[in-house]
Image (cartoon, rainbow, N blue to C red; front, side):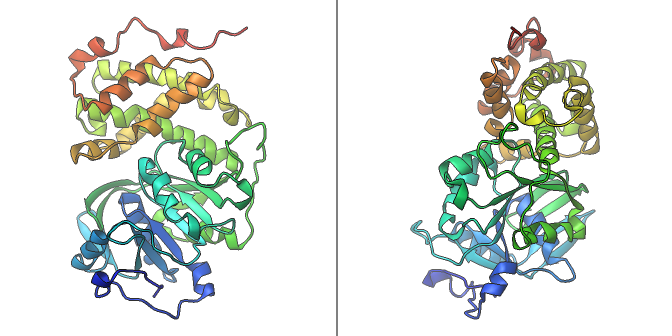
Length: 394
């Protein structure tokens, strides 16, 4: 097992193996964040015939106690059947008093924290990451990678390798170490440019590559059957991220303000019309972004008509699911709205596009406001057509 750093009160829970080697460290995959996505990745990796060593990084001592009480395993429930995996090490990141613990160099890490917590979480292990490390980001929304670069790794020469992932698996949390796999999906991964911010004029290459040791994490994910993963080019993964952003922006916050499951939204004509207004604003923004303009067909790919089909399809596929944002609101957690619709608003401002309806939606989610379809016109005046806003071509 991996070297585990703990305070004295937890030594009975966490076992240390001082025979930890650098070779094992190169193969070890760390999981930061044991939310739904972190649990799915950890469980899926451990299920492989020849799994890599996996360490769960726990940010507070109480989680270590929960781990002990739950039987030192991660449970994924599919179609009512429980499947538990036990082949994990755990490591605490901080003492009870909050002081950060030392640890070995991390070569491979999957960050499964919420977008709102990712920068702070990575900051706690900054001293264990370098240019030889590879970070897989799994967050909903956009803007997290740029924030991590600006605040934690401002020097791109010593910055870790970045890999983005987009998940379409449907998940619901049961407890700290148990989740329901409600809908089988897939995982897309792709290498991101180390430069910050991502700029299509500076990083136009479709074939950013990593050396073999740095590709280890990607290969482990590709070789994990339960994840149904594939690798795509840098350009493609950025475009796929934007498509996922739109799906989240058009479904998640609407499930919150109408307090409904995904499939209960668009059967109402007024909610569908509202979604189309939000989508028109978002489409204007995406078609203005330089990083999306380096492949053929980009204008059609991000047109309102095509994006609407994507949104409707994913809402139907996950019709019985509660969105992750609705799940967060229902248990009193903060949401990722600033990295979803908030990101669309901020990028729009860069190009003079006023996303009025998206701004209203963000405000309502933050205020925990719930309405019904008869109140839509009260909050979203129909007289404003987003297609008439934005930059005027000179």
